[in-house]
Length: 258
Image 1 (cartoon, rainbow, N blue to C red):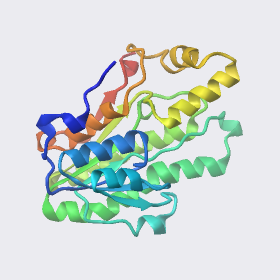
Image 2 (cartoon, rainbow, N blue to C red):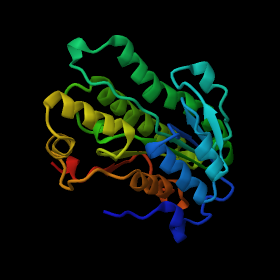
Image 3 (cartoon, rainbow, N blue to C red):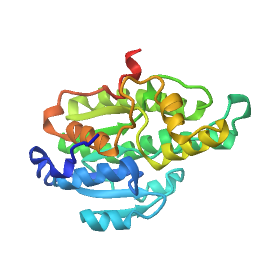
Image 4 (cartoon, one colour):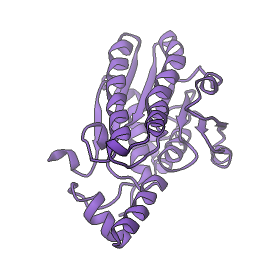
């Protein structure tokens, strides 16, 4: 199914002119799509990833920062005068709780909870001073629902939801909004790796994994495209969403309708 490309949406053209955005996990997948959409709307974009996003940055005239988001000292070196912060970076590990490596659990929480917190700490003084700001967190349907064997990811996304709501209440008087976007399974390398691994583990085809495992709880039986998430980020970043804060925007094909 074709989806509209935010780079070609006339209504978005230059709507964010003069704004500065920072997107984590921007070298590919959802983060790359968000960086492209924000740049097309006129924002200057900082692309942050543990691997170089230089090629994407060159395409959109942005700036690439290679940063390990589990390293608080490295985070402290990132730009602070940010108008739109998109917390997107994430990682996954699948194992039952009694076998889950504690160091992996800690790493996932550092990247997906502590890093967003530290970035918000750094960006909020600027947002507060100009009385405008947008915090957009790429959460997940797993921020609202749980699945077995994903204790670190599920608990991290639930924590991000709470962090977003707290930021929404604290930032309200300063014109700063904070919202989560909650996609189901998006067509990203992270999800494609899960499909490959589960197909191997269950000895079934990758198509069967997608339909019978990943999309078993959704009404719309297809993977979500990164551009769909990016359009939601673009919408939440605009002035039309000045009163939308502390919300969780489900983009899950009907998963949470159950």
